[in-house]
Length: 150
Length: 155
Image (tube, rainbow over the protein chains, first blue to last red):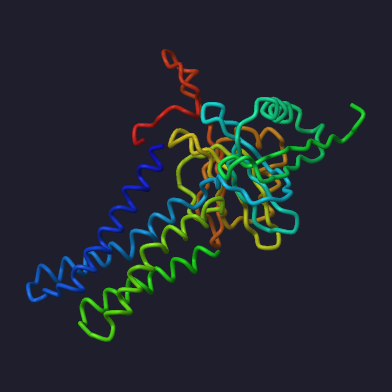
Protein backbone atom coordinates (compact mmCIF):
# COMPACT_ATOMS: atom_id res chain seq x y z
CA UNK A 1 0.00 0.00 0.00
CA UNK A 2 2.85 2.38 0.83
CA UNK A 3 4.33 1.64 -2.62
CA UNK A 4 1.09 2.75 -4.27
CA UNK A 5 1.00 5.88 -2.08
CA UNK A 6 4.61 6.70 -3.01
CA UNK A 7 3.70 6.27 -6.66
CA UNK A 8 0.68 8.57 -6.35
CA UNK A 9 2.87 11.24 -4.70
CA UNK A 10 5.41 10.90 -7.51
CA UNK A 11 2.73 11.21 -10.18
CA UNK A 12 1.16 14.24 -8.47
CA UNK A 13 4.59 15.96 -8.38
CA UNK A 14 5.24 15.05 -12.00
CA UNK A 15 1.82 16.38 -13.11
CA UNK A 16 2.46 19.56 -11.08
CA UNK A 17 5.77 20.21 -12.87
CA UNK A 18 4.10 19.69 -16.28
CA UNK A 19 1.29 22.01 -15.13
CA UNK A 20 3.87 24.63 -14.12
CA UNK A 21 5.52 24.38 -17.55
CA UNK A 22 2.09 24.82 -19.20
CA UNK A 23 1.49 27.89 -17.05
CA UNK A 24 4.85 29.36 -18.07
CA UNK A 25 4.05 28.56 -21.71
CA UNK A 26 0.98 30.80 -21.59
CA UNK A 27 2.03 33.42 -19.01
CA UNK A 28 5.60 33.52 -20.28
CA UNK A 29 6.99 35.87 -17.61
CA UNK A 30 10.66 34.91 -17.85
CA UNK A 31 12.34 38.31 -17.44
CA UNK A 32 13.13 37.72 -13.78
CA UNK A 33 16.13 35.45 -13.26
CA UNK A 34 14.46 33.35 -10.57
CA UNK A 35 11.51 32.58 -12.85
CA UNK A 36 13.90 31.33 -15.52
CA UNK A 37 15.70 29.23 -12.90
CA UNK A 38 12.40 27.83 -11.58
CA UNK A 39 11.24 26.97 -15.11
CA UNK A 40 14.46 25.18 -16.01
CA UNK A 41 14.34 23.41 -12.62
CA UNK A 42 10.75 22.28 -13.17
CA UNK A 43 11.68 21.11 -16.66
CA UNK A 44 14.59 19.06 -15.34
CA UNK A 45 12.43 17.53 -12.60
CA UNK A 46 9.72 16.64 -15.17
CA UNK A 47 12.42 15.15 -17.37
CA UNK A 48 14.43 13.14 -14.83
CA UNK A 49 11.95 12.10 -12.13
CA UNK A 50 10.14 9.46 -14.29
CA UNK A 51 13.51 7.99 -15.33
CA UNK A 52 14.55 7.66 -11.69
CA UNK A 53 11.19 6.11 -10.72
CA UNK A 54 11.40 3.66 -13.65
CA UNK A 55 14.75 2.38 -12.34
CA UNK A 56 13.09 1.82 -8.94
CA UNK A 57 10.01 0.05 -10.39
CA UNK A 58 11.95 -2.41 -12.57
CA UNK A 59 11.93 -5.87 -11.00
CA UNK A 60 8.59 -5.47 -9.25
CA UNK A 61 5.96 -8.15 -9.93
CA UNK A 62 3.32 -7.70 -12.61
CA UNK A 63 -0.13 -8.38 -11.08
CA UNK A 64 -1.69 -8.79 -14.55
CA UNK A 65 0.09 -11.76 -16.15
CA UNK A 66 -0.78 -12.37 -19.80
CA UNK A 67 -2.62 -15.59 -20.59
CA UNK A 68 -0.43 -18.53 -21.56
CA UNK A 69 1.68 -21.47 -20.44
CA UNK A 70 4.88 -20.85 -18.48
CA UNK A 71 7.71 -22.84 -16.92
CA UNK A 72 8.01 -22.01 -13.20
CA UNK A 73 11.60 -21.21 -12.17
CA UNK A 74 10.96 -20.07 -8.61
CA UNK A 75 8.33 -18.82 -6.22
CA UNK A 76 7.73 -17.05 -2.94
CA UNK A 77 4.56 -17.69 -0.96
CA UNK A 78 3.29 -14.54 0.77
CA UNK A 79 0.46 -15.69 3.00
CA UNK A 80 0.12 -12.28 4.66
CA UNK A 81 -0.26 -10.52 1.28
CA UNK A 82 -2.45 -13.41 0.03
CA UNK A 83 -0.28 -13.78 -3.06
CA UNK A 84 2.23 -15.97 -4.87
CA UNK A 85 5.24 -14.24 -6.39
CA UNK A 86 6.53 -16.41 -9.23
CA UNK A 87 9.48 -16.21 -11.60
CA UNK A 88 8.38 -17.80 -14.86
CA UNK A 89 9.62 -18.21 -18.39
CA UNK A 90 7.55 -18.69 -21.54
CA UNK A 91 8.80 -21.51 -23.83
CA UNK A 92 11.05 -19.90 -26.43
CA UNK A 93 11.62 -16.72 -24.42
CA UNK A 94 15.09 -15.80 -23.14
CA UNK A 95 14.00 -13.44 -20.37
CA UNK A 96 12.07 -14.66 -17.31
CA UNK A 97 9.23 -12.57 -15.87
CA UNK A 98 8.04 -11.89 -12.36
CA UNK A 99 4.28 -12.17 -11.73
CA UNK A 100 2.02 -11.82 -8.73
CA UNK A 101 -0.78 -14.40 -8.55
CA UNK A 102 -3.74 -14.77 -6.20
CA UNK A 103 -3.18 -17.03 -3.18
CA UNK A 104 -4.79 -20.49 -2.90
CA UNK A 105 -4.16 -22.71 0.09
CA UNK A 106 -4.05 -26.02 -1.82
CA UNK A 107 -1.53 -24.59 -4.30
CA UNK A 108 0.53 -23.13 -1.43
CA UNK A 109 0.73 -26.56 0.23
CA UNK A 110 1.74 -28.18 -3.05
CA UNK A 111 4.42 -25.53 -3.67
CA UNK A 112 5.69 -26.00 -0.13
CA UNK A 113 5.96 -29.74 -0.75
CA UNK A 114 7.81 -29.06 -4.02
CA UNK A 115 10.21 -26.76 -2.14
CA UNK A 116 11.01 -29.45 0.42
CA UNK A 117 11.16 -32.35 -2.05
CA UNK A 118 12.52 -30.47 -5.05
CA UNK A 119 14.30 -33.40 -6.63
CA UNK A 120 11.15 -35.52 -7.11
CA UNK A 121 9.70 -32.96 -9.52
CA UNK A 122 10.92 -32.80 -13.10
CA UNK A 123 9.01 -29.71 -14.07
CA UNK A 124 6.50 -27.27 -12.61
CA UNK A 125 4.41 -25.39 -15.13
CA UNK A 126 1.83 -22.67 -14.82
CA UNK A 127 -1.16 -21.92 -17.02
CA UNK A 128 -2.61 -18.43 -16.68
CA UNK A 129 -6.17 -17.95 -17.87
CA UNK A 130 -8.64 -15.11 -17.78
CA UNK A 131 -10.08 -14.99 -14.27
CA UNK A 132 -13.27 -13.60 -12.80
CA UNK A 133 -11.81 -10.09 -13.03
CA UNK A 134 -8.62 -8.43 -14.32
CA UNK A 135 -7.25 -8.32 -10.76
CA UNK A 136 -7.81 -12.04 -10.23
CA UNK A 137 -6.29 -14.02 -13.10
CA UNK A 138 -6.87 -17.77 -13.14
CA UNK A 139 -3.68 -19.69 -12.38
CA UNK A 140 -3.25 -23.46 -12.50
CA UNK A 141 0.06 -25.04 -11.45
CA UNK A 142 0.97 -28.48 -12.85
CA UNK A 143 3.55 -30.55 -10.98
CA UNK A 144 5.22 -33.19 -13.15
CA UNK A 145 7.05 -35.83 -11.13
CA UNK A 146 10.22 -37.63 -12.25
CA UNK A 147 8.56 -40.97 -11.45
CA UNK A 148 4.83 -40.48 -12.05
CA UNK A 149 3.81 -43.59 -10.08
CA UNK A 150 5.16 -42.27 -6.76
CA UNK B 1 12.23 -3.11 -23.72
CA UNK B 2 9.00 -1.37 -24.76
CA UNK B 3 9.33 0.91 -21.76
CA UNK B 4 12.45 2.46 -23.30
CA UNK B 5 10.32 3.74 -26.21
CA UNK B 6 7.83 5.27 -23.80
CA UNK B 7 10.65 6.93 -21.85
CA UNK B 8 12.23 8.22 -25.06
CA UNK B 9 8.83 9.66 -26.07
CA UNK B 10 8.54 11.24 -22.61
CA UNK B 11 11.98 12.88 -22.88
CA UNK B 12 11.17 14.17 -26.37
CA UNK B 13 7.79 15.62 -25.33
CA UNK B 14 9.18 17.38 -22.22
CA UNK B 15 12.08 18.83 -24.24
CA UNK B 16 9.59 20.25 -26.77
CA UNK B 17 7.55 21.90 -23.96
CA UNK B 18 10.73 23.29 -22.37
CA UNK B 19 11.96 24.63 -25.73
CA UNK B 20 8.58 26.29 -26.36
CA UNK B 21 8.65 27.95 -22.91
CA UNK B 22 12.25 29.20 -23.13
CA UNK B 23 12.50 30.08 -26.84
CA UNK B 24 8.96 31.56 -27.13
CA UNK B 25 8.40 30.49 -30.73
CA UNK B 26 4.70 30.97 -31.48
CA UNK B 27 4.62 28.10 -33.97
CA UNK B 28 5.94 25.74 -31.30
CA UNK B 29 3.11 26.55 -28.86
CA UNK B 30 0.37 24.22 -30.24
CA UNK B 31 2.94 21.42 -30.65
CA UNK B 32 4.06 22.01 -27.04
CA UNK B 33 0.47 21.74 -25.79
CA UNK B 34 0.04 18.38 -27.54
CA UNK B 35 3.50 17.22 -26.38
CA UNK B 36 2.76 18.19 -22.77
CA UNK B 37 -0.54 16.28 -22.85
CA UNK B 38 1.24 13.22 -24.24
CA UNK B 39 4.11 13.60 -21.73
CA UNK B 40 1.64 13.33 -18.86
CA UNK B 41 0.80 9.74 -19.86
CA UNK B 42 4.17 8.41 -21.04
CA UNK B 43 5.66 7.60 -17.58
CA UNK B 44 2.50 5.70 -16.61
CA UNK B 45 2.67 3.63 -19.79
CA UNK B 46 6.41 3.05 -19.27
CA UNK B 47 5.90 1.95 -15.67
CA UNK B 48 3.08 -0.44 -16.55
CA UNK B 49 5.34 -2.14 -19.09
CA UNK B 50 8.30 -2.34 -16.67
CA UNK B 51 6.30 -4.45 -14.18
CA UNK B 52 7.63 -8.00 -14.15
CA UNK B 53 10.72 -7.20 -16.22
CA UNK B 54 14.17 -7.81 -14.65
CA UNK B 55 16.04 -4.78 -13.34
CA UNK B 56 19.70 -4.29 -14.27
CA UNK B 57 20.28 -2.27 -11.07
CA UNK B 58 21.12 -4.88 -8.43
CA UNK B 59 21.66 -3.25 -5.01
CA UNK B 60 25.08 -3.68 -3.45
CA UNK B 61 23.48 -4.94 -0.23
CA UNK B 62 22.99 -8.56 0.85
CA UNK B 63 20.12 -10.42 -0.81
CA UNK B 64 18.52 -13.82 -0.24
CA UNK B 65 18.47 -15.65 -3.57
CA UNK B 66 15.15 -17.46 -4.03
CA UNK B 67 16.16 -18.84 -7.41
CA UNK B 68 18.34 -18.00 -10.38
CA UNK B 69 18.46 -18.64 -14.11
CA UNK B 70 21.50 -18.32 -16.36
CA UNK B 71 21.33 -17.27 -20.01
CA UNK B 72 24.56 -18.87 -21.25
CA UNK B 73 24.40 -17.35 -24.72
CA UNK B 74 24.34 -13.78 -23.40
CA UNK B 75 26.22 -14.38 -20.09
CA UNK B 76 23.37 -12.94 -18.06
CA UNK B 77 22.30 -14.24 -14.66
CA UNK B 78 18.68 -13.61 -13.66
CA UNK B 79 18.21 -13.46 -9.89
CA UNK B 80 14.89 -13.77 -8.08
CA UNK B 81 15.69 -12.30 -4.68
CA UNK B 82 14.36 -11.18 -1.34
CA UNK B 83 15.86 -7.84 -0.28
CA UNK B 84 16.06 -8.88 3.39
CA UNK B 85 13.83 -6.46 5.22
CA UNK B 86 13.51 -3.61 2.71
CA UNK B 87 10.00 -4.92 2.09
CA UNK B 88 8.46 -8.35 1.62
CA UNK B 89 8.00 -8.20 -2.16
CA UNK B 90 10.68 -10.17 -4.02
CA UNK B 91 12.38 -8.60 -7.06
CA UNK B 92 14.00 -9.93 -10.21
CA UNK B 93 17.38 -8.61 -11.38
CA UNK B 94 19.66 -9.32 -14.32
CA UNK B 95 23.43 -9.02 -14.03
CA UNK B 96 26.33 -9.84 -16.36
CA UNK B 97 27.87 -13.02 -14.96
CA UNK B 98 30.67 -15.39 -15.95
CA UNK B 99 28.97 -18.78 -16.72
CA UNK B 100 32.03 -20.71 -15.48
CA UNK B 101 31.29 -19.43 -11.94
CA UNK B 102 27.64 -20.45 -12.08
CA UNK B 103 28.46 -24.10 -11.26
CA UNK B 104 29.78 -23.05 -7.87
CA UNK B 105 26.72 -20.95 -7.30
CA UNK B 106 24.12 -23.64 -7.96
CA UNK B 107 26.09 -26.91 -7.84
CA UNK B 108 25.00 -27.65 -4.30
CA UNK B 109 21.20 -27.57 -3.95
CA UNK B 110 21.62 -26.00 -0.50
CA UNK B 111 22.93 -22.86 -2.18
CA UNK B 112 19.64 -22.38 -3.95
CA UNK B 113 17.46 -22.31 -0.88
CA UNK B 114 17.59 -19.25 1.36
CA UNK B 115 21.21 -18.52 0.44
CA UNK B 116 22.26 -15.01 1.39
CA UNK B 117 24.69 -13.49 -1.10
CA UNK B 118 26.15 -10.16 -2.03
CA UNK B 119 26.96 -9.45 -5.67
CA UNK B 120 29.87 -7.11 -6.27
CA UNK B 121 31.18 -5.63 -9.51
CA UNK B 122 34.07 -7.86 -10.59
CA UNK B 123 36.65 -7.96 -13.37
CA UNK B 124 35.55 -7.41 -16.99
CA UNK B 125 32.20 -5.85 -16.18
CA UNK B 126 30.77 -9.06 -14.64
CA UNK B 127 29.68 -9.57 -11.05
CA UNK B 128 31.23 -11.74 -8.33
CA UNK B 129 29.02 -13.58 -5.83
CA UNK B 130 30.11 -13.28 -2.21
CA UNK B 131 28.58 -15.72 0.27
CA UNK B 132 27.48 -14.06 3.49
CA UNK B 133 27.60 -15.79 6.85
CA UNK B 134 24.18 -14.41 7.70
CA UNK B 135 22.97 -14.79 11.29
CA UNK B 136 19.20 -14.40 11.38
CA UNK B 137 18.23 -11.97 14.16
CA UNK B 138 15.69 -14.46 15.56
CA UNK B 139 18.57 -16.65 16.74
CA UNK B 140 19.78 -13.80 18.91
CA UNK B 141 18.50 -13.31 22.44
CA UNK B 142 15.30 -11.27 22.90
CA UNK B 143 14.51 -10.95 19.23
CA UNK B 144 11.50 -12.89 18.02
CA UNK B 145 11.37 -11.66 14.41
CA UNK B 146 12.05 -13.95 11.45
CA UNK B 147 15.61 -13.56 10.24
CA UNK B 148 15.24 -12.16 6.75
CA UNK B 149 12.24 -10.00 7.67
CA UNK B 150 13.94 -7.99 10.37
CA UNK B 151 14.14 -4.27 9.54
CA UNK B 152 17.57 -2.71 9.36
CA UNK B 153 18.67 0.57 10.81
CA UNK B 154 18.54 2.28 7.39
CA UNK B 155 15.03 0.96 6.48
